[in-house]
Image (cartoon, rainbow, N blue to C red; front, side):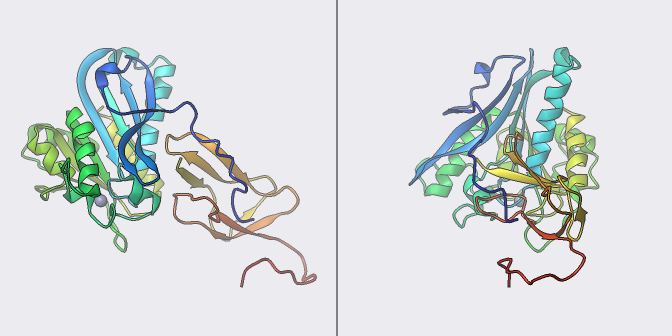
Length: 321
Ligand SMILES: [Zn+2]
């Protein structure tokens, strides 16, 4: 078994594209999911996915931003979970009257880096190019659009990161604790560690602060993986205040599977379930290998399964060396 099979292109449904993030245009009490056009490539527009919810009562706009470094993906399910939780509690009538202001979630900010599973944007660190240049090179123009079309529309920013390749991180916050508002944001998150520091020039956090926006950085563990314990801790922390595809693996290598058991699910960046991958009905199987990068690409092998047998029958060619 080498992957989800022929691609269905059953991507997120009814997702429109907008050119400008105009919060006043959102209908209060309605969840919004859309693509925001940020740039253009030789092959067409480059759009970032956006979740939005505007409460009935006026209030501040809070933004949660993930993957400005393209391979730092733990923030993506954090944002999906926060919006899923909010949607569920609104559906049950729980918090409708109590939400003031607007919540914006950008699960993937650096779209080209995310697609290549790399930190950078065209070889540049997008988190050192803020606020960008309207007439600069492609990464500077991208940074400019991100900063002026998204960041300046926010009052509070949670910028979600992970460690770089080859390093490990705890769940920690980087924040200017001398600012009372940022101090409260950081403390309410209950991270393992708070690092009190300033932000490097050109960073999203530093530029936001220079523009009067209250911003902090959350470092959520390690790159190129989904760490569910740290993800859920971050979801809980942020919740106290305020078509590219992501497989969720339920199994581990060397685990045996019953017929029809769920191995993995593929979700869109908006969190919609696109495909469920199950063990075959004909045999009991064992997981020989699994994909470890949670960003699925067309044709990627998600799982390598072996059929469990009682003896050695005729040897077969399974395509592996
Ligand atoms: Zn980062």
